[in-house]
Image (cartoon, rainbow, N blue to C red; front, side, top):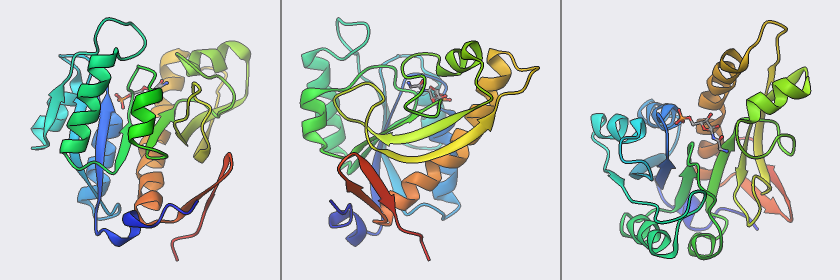
Length: 216
Ligand code: GAR
C-alpha cells in the first residue's frame, strides 16, 4: 500500500500526538515543523497522565492539549477511554497518530479507527528489546549498539512494520541514564525525519516491510 492518497494531496498532515511523559519528542517534532522541515501540523496533544510535562510543553507552544483519563486498566485504555481518545482525535481532524512516550498499549478499536495511521518511537533497535525500559534491557544484555526505531503500530507490542532506525553505541562507562539520554537525542532527530517522509507520501508499506523513497 502506498501511503500517499490523502496524505500527499494535503499541504500539511494533521498530527495527533499522544504521550505520558515529559514530551521531548513532541517538542522536537514541533520545532522541526516550525523550522519548515516537516509538512505537518500538530492538531492536538493528548496525555493519559494529568500532570504530564508533554501537556505543559504543548500549551506553552499554544497547541491544543488535553488530559483524557485512561480508565480502569494499568497498561491499556478501557473501552470508554478508548472511545474518548478516538473521538478527540477525529474531532481534531487527525490523519496520523504519533505516539511519543505513550505508555499504554493501543489495540483493536483504536487501530481500526486509524488503519496504518498510528506510529510509535521505541528506544531500541527492534525487534530487540521490546516493552518497558528497553535501554536497560540493552545494557543488561551487553549489546555494543542499540538505538531507536520508528514503526507502525499493529496488534502486537512493538512489532509493526519498521519505518526508520538510528543506531547508538553503548559505551563502557554507560549507565541506564546516560544511555537513555543518548538514545533520546537520536529519537529527537529520527522522529521528525520519519514523520516528514510520511507527510510527503514517501513511505510505502509492503507486507511487514516499508520502503521509503528518497525525498529528491
Ligand atoms: C522516549 O524515550 C520513548 O522512546 C519512550 O518514552 C520516552 C518518552 O520521552 N517510549 C517507550 O518506551 C515506548 N515503549 P518524551 O516524553 O520525552 O518524548
